[in-house]
Image (cartoon, rainbow, N blue to C red; front, top):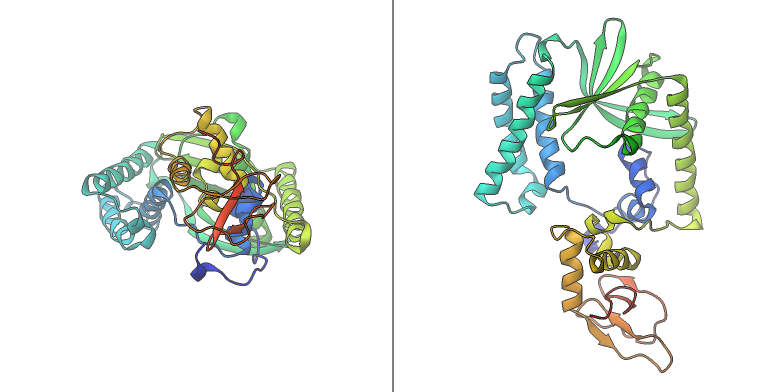
Length: 335
């Protein structure tokens, strides 16, 4: 986190489906992003998903009968111009060939959608609907991709451009849809009957019914999560949850447990070489400066070009402006 992104620590204004999911993936990353205000630029896949979402949003804002492939092409040109202007997209520094591939993949997903359902048959209530409410004293917010009406019933439709998760990994997706259902009911008095996940890149739709049990379980989880966030903020501390995703986490360079996890997995050949964390650890290993330590104290290392003034430090320094220090055998490892 750079000096420009540092702000006064404060609780977020509420929970969204993505922020709740982030907290349960890793509370430490939640802290950096939501409490400290650290900025994480969107990656390639996220930006690709945004491009597809934008095209479909514009298509579904057309009147029924005008939602055609030709209209989608025109909207894709608008969405592409918006994408090019995005600072996060510019940070990717894509070559001309890579940008062509980006557009091709995005357009492929749009075409797939037209094969999955007839957009002119959909009775659209709203697109990109921003909702904000308070349920059980928890401030909640979110943006629904599409709210439809099927006869007399409301349906939540959410576009996904990633892979279709295996059944055992769909829990967070169902929670996201139930999160939206709870907010729609709280703001309109009408609960949607079901939710749909439209996986545009893979031409597959997953559906779930909203019930008292499913929405109630979601509200209970939101309430418990919000209490946990407040407890962590007020002194309990945000814990690091290590695992395979550490190799893809932008917080990892200033997170010794995360760096240790990635290093361990690299030794076992369990980290993809295109993962950002793989390159980061390799760079750290090249930049190691061994720091002399008092007799009897485990050897410490600095993972930047700057050495800490107190070489007898027994803990871990988490100040990226000065140094990141950790035990040699825990993070970098002996070659």
